[in-house]
Length: 218
Ligand SMILES: C[S@@+](CC[C@H](N)C(=O)[O-])C[C@H]1O[C@@H](n2cnc3c(N)ncnc32)[C@H](O)[C@@H]1O
Image (cartoon, rainbow, N blue to C red; front, side, top):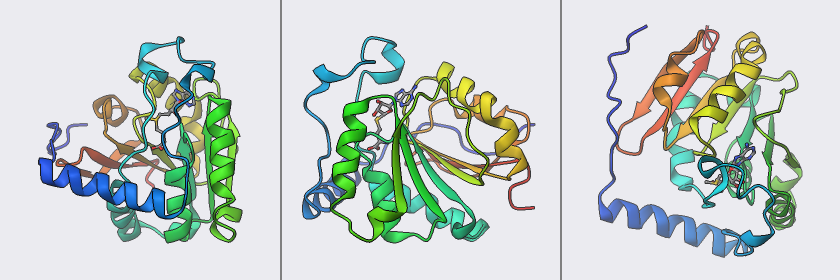
């Protein structure tokens, strides 16, 4: 299927970049969270693939708001499990838990030290943190349990693993009419070319996309 959408890669102005980064810093510091982990030497997967685990950074939290705003116009958040794929220190999941009424919020990452940090960060949110679960898991192997998802992909890995993860779970995603959010959406063309996947909206300044699987809003 051909889409008449702008797939060019945008680049926010320096002022916009600074604003998004300051927003992150303020939120992370005001809650006393561990953001970017320094001890990457303790990671177990860092040499596995250049594409997959060679960088760790927290996504711009305002991009989560941008995507969720579009999603709210399309469906009810309380019908969805928010799943941060490659959740790192859990900050986007915890941010979502403080602001949005998802039915359930989960995150997984293949680096156990990051999941330990995510669980420490979770303790800073006595109420919203209770709605979140963080686990160690590898996207290239994982078969998702049945739920209606918002798969939250903040550029966690390269296109090979992305394709593997989506094709391993396509049946569940389609039968539950799930959604996929891509922040910094490298590989969007391949995802859009997957059977049953349709683009709902793309923000060409921030390279953020929302896609539905299996007639999600039908
Ligand atoms: C750019 S970081 C983003 C972290 C988090 N989403 C955030 O914005 O704070 C990408 C994360 O994906 C994880 N990752 C990479 N490949 C993975 C895989 N195959 N399975 C699970 N996690 C993976 C890395 O360990 C890293 O924490």
